[in-house]
Image 1 (cartoon, rainbow, N blue to C red):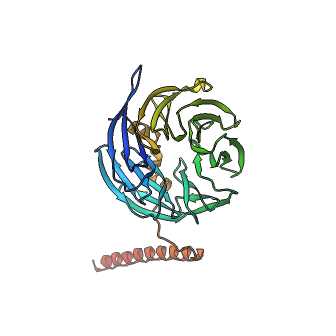
Image 2: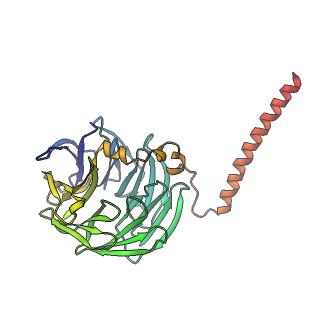
Image 3: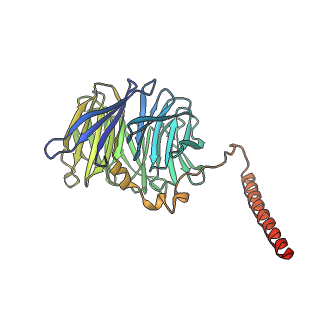
Length: 368
């Protein structure tokens, strides 16, 4: 169970596919493991954590699938419009964005919506959670890049951009982030929030994945995949991955090797092994499988992978500080001072409660 690699992909035909990959010395194999037809419209996005797969669709729902029991776990209903982005933070939270401009924070233990942000005036197109769990980035059709303080449950920073960005993503270390607009990747520094480099891809970019803080894999509206150096913005390698345009990429580590999964409009899903010592050479194709479907989204479920990437301090002693918290909803036009007044009232109530207890204790001692 723990060594299993499961490629999960969604399609226009409303189905979520699961393919189990069997590693081997010579040739890897991918065999059909499950299909789930829980949605009533095409799938738009899929995300995984150690136990669950979450799929978003044009039917405005988020379906949760239990990978260990291989059963449907439930459905999340809160958004109006297509679910456009999903991302798990460890095994504690799931963030979702949709056409209604909302970002929702879900607790994955009770599957409750803890927090709702009115993130963008238009649609939420992409979101990304900082490795610490304290911040999140989002871009939408209102031509803004927004930073969210997940600890305080509020907007932290808004940056206007000239065009609608359709992808935002943190580097693995969280020291930088990228914003994708059409065929360009702008690299931002976290401290200065300024652009420190721009990568230009020949075609419109459909998917990006970081292999390391320096290496970025890019797929566009073509059959090629390219690997770029983020610091120099140079293309280190390009190779023909599919017969038609590449739709999605997903990277992960397995037994100290860097892997890349790719899906295409031709219905094929392929698994590649990257050699970082020879990054200029074409990756090794491990296996491929034809889904005979029009694929829209892709992820890889690997319990061991997710477990290794979690930071113990984040989910144990520091969980209260690192993870999104449930907060009382505050109307957008509410004055900031009213929050301070409410906080003061809570402190006063607690103090009064303590004073009452002290009086009762003293009265009991006098009676004795």
